[in-house]
Length: 431
Length: 183
Image 1: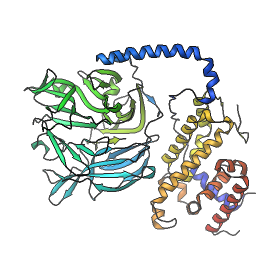
Image 2: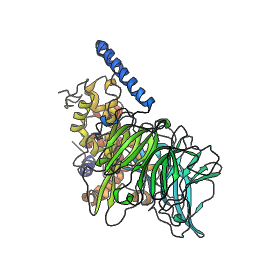
Image 3: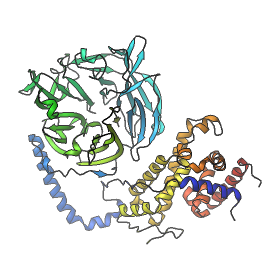
Image 4: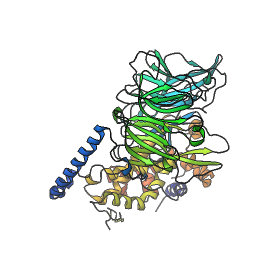
């Protein structure tokens, strides 16, 4: 017979438990390795078939390799562009997000908030994120944000080291001078400052001239690299133009710094960006960080570009690369490419040749497929919804995981909101 | 249909089809396990996350599972481990149970999602439960919430049947004392 205490416990637990009426679908990892030791006898029976399959795969791989070495796309049109719901093995189990100027550590499987990141100093508004490490190595998060000081708004950088279970530790300010903003009012998390950290975690690249920042219009677009130990900085500039902006930076594990930019009054001739009135180019470039100059164009190699007339550009949408991250140890770039009219792609570009070698996603669902971060073979990006909504507050996308080597795209449980009434603060995420 | 050690159906467990077996097991037991995780962690999303990760772990190790009929026991243990980690993690930043700081951080599911929990009786039981050592709390919930036998409670907690029995008894006594009940 159950005691009164046990009965009270059961009643309470049942009342709590019954607040859950259903559970989400199971997201099983996709199998990568099909055979384990326990199944060896069956595998042995399949040896002839496996041998034949191996030969076919080898032939296919050699053909694909030949295409790639020649710089030709290996049938990019052949991809299926399907989006699955699920998380595959090897997907990072957590990611770092920022919204409303606040930072969070969230689980990848269900999207719940594991930890909140405390503001390093009162009033700190997070506007940029970058991470080092992964699920199995101590990770550092770099926060870029504005702080209101008596002398005016300042852009400052802090490092947060994650401890056990990805718990954020205390914040430490990255050495080096704070970047003075021309205005005296903080933007309170309404802008997005491109930030990237080098593979070794020793240098931070950032763009202090985001066009939304107060006073940024009066400065030439600039990319700065700062040593996180000494605070020593170097900067590269783009030719000033109201239409020029650097929209994203990404640092590959092999040391390659990739940047995506729109350059006004420019064109591309013989693989080089040159001044040209009336046209603008969207570019992906790789910066040689060891070069000694200060011109971003002179010290960078052009990887991909799209050109359009400055008169028609706004009406017909951007053409060319919109955002890009370095993946696969620096050998490839995953980029969102826009073609006029209304054709968008999430594509894999070979760094060596600048050619598109795979298309991961094409069409309406790629319309906002902005890559945000890469961790190994997992590229985090925003996936447009299946159906468009045109008014009010609505879900205009989800975070998703693209795997360039597998051509897989998986939706993650992170909705991204838009609004036609008031612009919501940008949603930033990285892993 | 296979059955576990209690004779409970564990769905169509086919060793050569891990995904369908795990999916079938999930369909049958996920709700109960998620509710258990909710009671133990207090957060719906965390509970869902723990259960998802437990089933993913089962799927990963399916071929190493010597007895597929033990799959439910395995996943139950995984959920308990997940809850334990989560409880340790969230509790570590708070003050001791019973203090204002601790009460202020009671997970929202208990206050926002269940109007019935506004009843003082349940809040009192819950607060007392949270003050028990983790092992006693787990044993009590497995025994009196999931209605597991002593043997199943023991195997889910990886302890002997005798230890499970004494843990439940000690937990019940401690809970009774915290609730100021007469023995």
